[in-house]
Length: 312
Ligand SMILES: Cc1cc2nc3c(=O)[nH]c(=O)nc-3n(C[C@H](O)[C@H](O)[C@H](O)COP(=O)(O)O)c2cc1C
Image 1 (cartoon, rainbow, N blue to C red):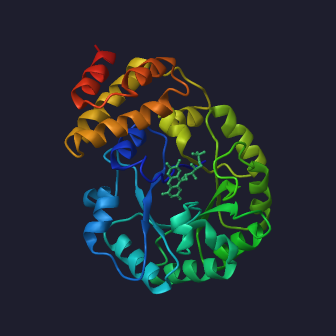
Image 2: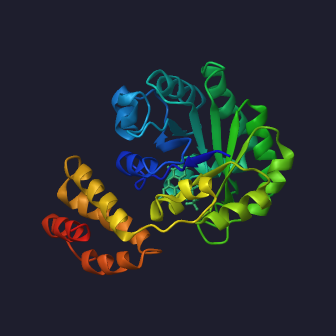
């Protein structure tokens, strides 16, 4: 079993990655994507998206971080992949799943699922740019509008030399609407030999079991499930749901607040905490009350007081 913390642009930044991986259970984490155009980025771009590169490519709790690139420019994908790895990325991930209209309009992310040969070229270029010992992985959805090219896409990624494939079990058209189609992952599993990492809508230990049974792989990637329940990976490893007292979530929230307070503007800090509490309230009843109190709040001082009150 391998458990990976998913890339989540604008949500799982360096701060949340540190807190969630510190709860234990994760083998590695994938960074938010770096959108590659036609040139090699200066180092500061890699450091700003993935500050863990400044500390050996690990989160503060020691979990390896893998940089994710998004784009279709063969030479630039190769050169940026090389640079990311030189700077300390543990492997290199390629994003073929992003549903953003802007990104797709520029032929990046999920739109490339219409072109298996482009997937092949991009993966091949990145593979050839890196030493054999460096893991190259790709992340895709089931397709763009439908699953017609799903198996061709997976096969193209494997044939190009990827070491692992993560699949978010929805098409681009399906967005994030439940359910995730884990049974489609089972079809991919039978079609490729490289490890398959199943992703999408794993919110509990029970979901884990149902997902692996359908997908035929024990390797999973957790996204929003780990944001609303940071101990989810640990629970899955222990094969046991566990109580998560609100006070322990309160400690995490306060730790998050302290950390972002020195890194972000007060306005951004308030926004980030609201974003996380909005996820937490899906399963923690106490978070609903906190959400009602901070939903309209703009003052960082007041948010600070509300968070401090949880742990008093
Ligand atoms: C806010 C947000 C940002 C995301 N950003 C990325 C990203 O940068 N790269 C990527 O490959 N997937 C991204 N995803 C997709 C997730 O990695 C994951 O595939 C998806 O959320 C389904 O998994 P889950 O149900 O466990 O959350 C993002 C998802 C969310 C909700």
